[in-house]
Structure formats: structure tokens, C-alpha cells
Amino acid sequence: MAYADKSSHRVYAKPGELWILNFQNRKGLIAEYQAKQLIVMIDRYEEQA
Image (cartoon, rainbow, N blue to C red):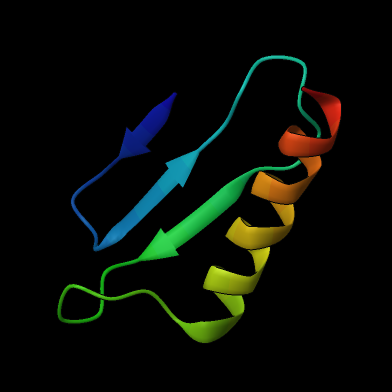
């Protein structure tokens, strides 16, 4: 589920998931720490599959 407002931020949340990911568009890219958070989340879901 993605949420967006008038800012450059996008917030992604999934029902039942404690983590909420918040990305800021910086010329089409996200910050390094945001990419690391995304990778951790992907790894968590791959382990559960």
C-alpha cells in the first residue's frame, strides 16, 4: 500500500507489517539508507517464502 501527498515522499505500508518504508525521490533515486532498508525488507520476505 503506497501513500503519497504533495511532497516528494512516498510511504509504503503493508497490513500486519511493523515496518513502514518512507522513500524520498531525489532526481529519480532514493537515499542510500533508504535502499538499505528496502533490501532488508526484501530479504525478510524471501526468508519467509
